[in-house]
Image (cartoon, rainbow, N blue to C red; front, side, top):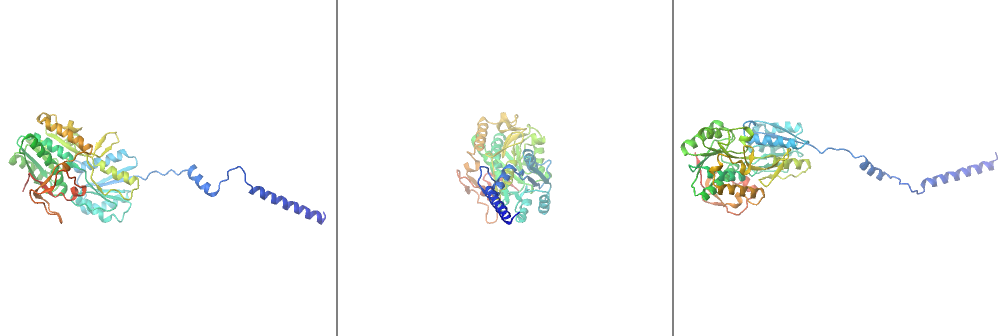
Amino acid sequence: MSKKKIFQLIGLLLVFSLLMVACDEAPTDEVVDDPVDEEVDEEVDDPVDEEVEGVTLAINHFSIIEGTTWSGAQHRAGQRIAEKYDNVDYIYREEVGPDLTIPFAEEMIADGANIVIGNAEFMGLPLKDIVDQYPDVYFASVVGSDVTTERNFIRYFPRQYQALYLEGLIAGALTETNSIGIVSAFPVAQVSRRQAGFVLGVQEAAELLGKEIDIYVRYSGDWFLPAEEREIATTLVEEYNVDVITQQTDSGAPLDVAEERGIWFVGKDMDTVGHYGWSDTSTVAISFDTRWEVLFEQMVLDKLADNPNPETILMLGMESSMELADGREVYAVDIMNDNKIGIEAISPEALPLIDQEILDLVEERREMMIAGQWDPFTAHELVSNGTGLALEGLPIPERGEVVKPAGEEPTAEWLLGSFNFDLLGTTILE
């Protein structure tokens, strides 16, 4: 082949190559994915199935669970939360003192706990010492009087006083000796506040029915002292002629005394007849039931939403509710007895002994509190008895002092941390 022909062939090959490159770069009607489009398409077409992060709710119970109303109710709350949510587990420890709070908390965190609760203030407060070490864990403690909080340290307590007020109306109507007794633990804002709710109800019933009712309180010195509680209840019956008795302690001893002596008992924290089978409605006129799960659910939902700043003062009342796994709606607190709720919970044996005016008032006020339209501590003035517990920087108000006027709504912080006095008309026994 001549050199001329060789150069001609090389030229043709170069032209052909240029034409092929031009064809490759020419626009077409096909959609060509660029790298960005490919990344988007991968996210849309091949989603990663990530489960919502689960919650392990851990409760340190200060007492035993079985046979107590306080820890028993919070244990039931943990179980109800776990029953409702597939991605929530519940673990717990019993009889936890302040020296064991942190070791148990850290042990449970190692087991996956991301909400850790101390169900009494004296053994729950130590949790605040480790909140910074575990910034992704919610810690929570019941409020006794201290309202210290941190970003991830929640203080909680339900508005039990609302149900206690309704109980007080019923107790005030039932007493025939006009003497009512309270077996109590010790002076602290938590106790004074709850007793005050009951006292307001008794006093309102007394005014409506033209009675003069004495309310006697004696302290045992702790929450769970069955022998001491029995002794106090017996003294109240024998020496002060009480025919209706209630308690701000946790054992079943005061109920036992009421049953033995044939007087009316008004319960706390749980429906002891319906839940534990303690006694029956011939002794238990009414109880109130605390649904701690309503408060725990808010913590759980905040945690599931990965909320870094949960509400740190949690005080919910009858206006707040939760739907259980079985579809029942329960309010944070309510009157309850023998598995019945509301006005229907009043003992059938007690019902004929209660004036219709009181029954109507119980029903009306309960409905208003559920609707968030009424509260006993807002409606009534709160007048000091001159007794209670002096707190740091907060002495007990003088006897007869109107600490809060009628119609003024107290804040949750004030109710939880500053209610350090008994209401006028309460007799504190030595």
